[in-house]
Amino acid sequence: MRFSNLKKILIATFFVIILYLIMAFTLQTIGLDNAQLFIKKTGVWSPIVFIILCALSLIIAPLSGSSLFVVGGTLFGKHNAFLLSYIATIIGCSANFWISRKFGRKVAQRFIGKANLDELDKFIDRFKNHRSILYMILIMPLSQDIISYAIGLTRIKYTHFLIALILSSTIIISGYVYIGSSLLEMLIQPK
Image 1: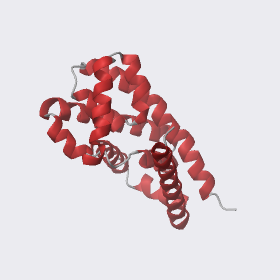
Image 2: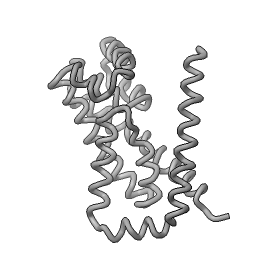
Image 3: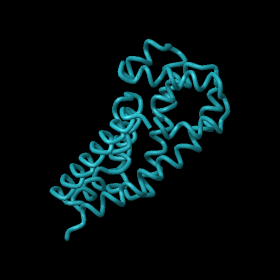
Image 4: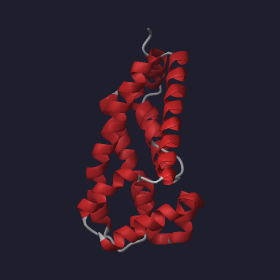
């Protein structure tokens, strides 16, 4: 492993830890019961807003929906958050696919940012050689948002993309919602 890759992993890990600590502190300050009560009082609007925010975080690729999935598991309950996050992922990643497919690379670049353009190109080159659904399932956990844009720029059929997305999202979202929110809840618990 090259030093630059290790540095990226360490920086990403650092930011994830900081993000978890901020989420834990915020939920401890507000009170988990108060936050969950607020969610219940808003009725159907909270799940709708949650889906929209998660989908947008996938469409605007430099953002990350994963922290929303984790908070969702804590606020909505793990099973509800899984379903809401799953719907948001299908909507967001499908939008990415169609944005790329209909408007091309220049528009996709605006959504993913110039910093992620090299990564997009690497994924496009990989998909030119590997068009199988299994390959898409295996590679999607790396960066679902950017990969969705990349696949939209290839000749891969939407139905194949959707099958891969449905299967890979189950694993990815489960990890964030069930494991991530459990870790967050452990940080929130009074000592």
